[in-house]
Length: 106
Image 1 (spheres, rainbow, N blue to C red):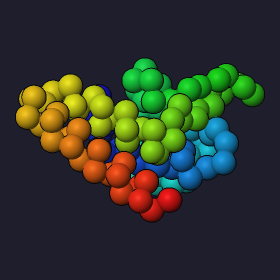
Image 2: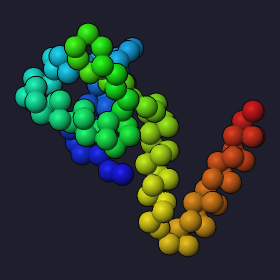
Image 3: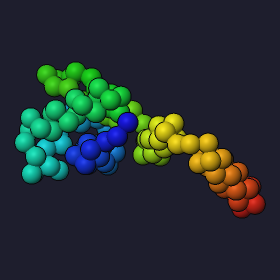
Image 4: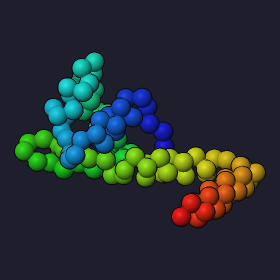
């Protein structure tokens, strides 16, 4: 799954918050974006499974389903499915080397 530039900006804005947010909460961080555009972007992220939403106080409130690190790993795994055998072998080698480095550091 790929995210567009605005989707990434919205996700970053939600990660910076401590709790969930509605469109009105996020709008000050997006002065160049129309309310309806921001609302559509949040809904699209929800459909992609990136955000959870709940209806409270007559509005939908959104929060990320994953942390930044979990999201990065998820996107990386999606991309791995599109690579060839040689690339997968190289990725395995890199992961093993990183694990060795981590063990030596601890």
